[in-house]
Amino acid sequence: MSSSSISSSASSHSLAAYGWDEGWEAEFSPYATQGLVPGRVVRVDRGLCDVVTLFGTVRADTEFVVPRDPMKVVCTGDWVAVDPEGANPRYVRTLLPRRTAFVRSTSSKRSEGQVLATNIDRVIICVSLAAELDYGRIERFLALAMSCSTGEAPLHKSADSWESGAQPVVVLTKADLVPDPVTLAHLVQDVETAAPGVPVLTVSALHDDGLDVLVATVGDGTSVLLGQSGAGKSTLANALLGEDVMDVRAARDIDGKGRHTTTTRNLLALPGGGVLIDTPGLRGVGLWDAETGVGQVFSEIEELARACRFHDCAHESEPGCAVLAALENGDLPVRRLESYRKLMRENQWITAKTDQRLRAELRKEWKKRGAEGKAAMDAKRGRWR
Image 1: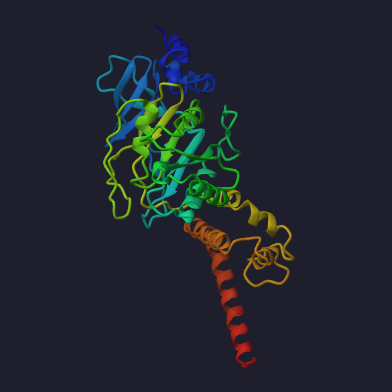
Image 2: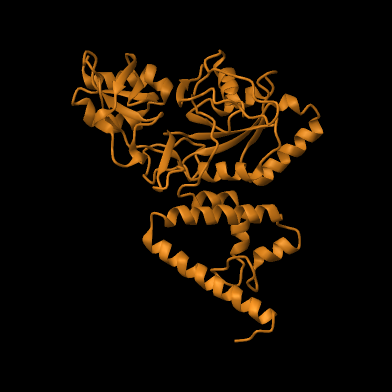
């Protein structure tokens, strides 16, 4: 079978279940003439990866695609070109351009981003109802989800994709732990306030409650499950797959936290259609180039800011600030504004670490505000200059 025939056959057979389409076929066509085979990375482990191809899942070495830029390393969800059958060992020869990527900043002092999943259409943020809801963390996940883009114009986007490249969905898991429907409805409403315009679903994998809605939601495209350990991601993945594929352990009763049963990112084809990427629990979720996402998550604050007297209003003490006016009359919750300020400051800081000009501008702005604050304090104490 010729390479072009392989590509065409994959479009209508096994690879279609993993998201292969005409756009990917067009991207792959130059490599088909080289005798390479298309495939999607389903797991990465220590320089090797599992790649699903038309001929089944193969183990391939990533030696030839190890760039200096950590943002371009092979990741679960990537479409790649690999050596044909018979090659020993088999190598991944190239990565096809990514349509989207979910990226967080690392804890490294080198200001690096870490790609958690690629070519995704939907970000499923799992939040356990076994513990008190952390709305700030939900907003943080959403900001990253709404910034889920490679900056490249994709050849194809699903109908439900957001401008940023992926649609966020919040799933409140372990809903059976909140048996009172009124209380559950209040919790959903609170999360909807923290996630304006984002679907919020409640699911109990234990009793199959709400699974039908979630199955329909992830029934096409690629979805990635994200959340803390103990959020019920692996249990949810097993429920969607209809079998116990992912290892599951009970969360600690004292704080509802899990024990990192999932240690790698795994891509799985769902029986009812669609593709699912399960990920390890995330303790830290640092922002990475997420200004657009923060703006979308806090769209009501961005809208209010347009009515401020000064275009560069910091919403702290400036006269004619529409944001502070909304805060004072109760239209804007204090928690929302504090969370907005925190995420914007963090995003500026991480961006400034890699942008010398922005770093200088921020330093100048901080000095200016410090001087203004000192002058205001001196005036208050009667020490005029």
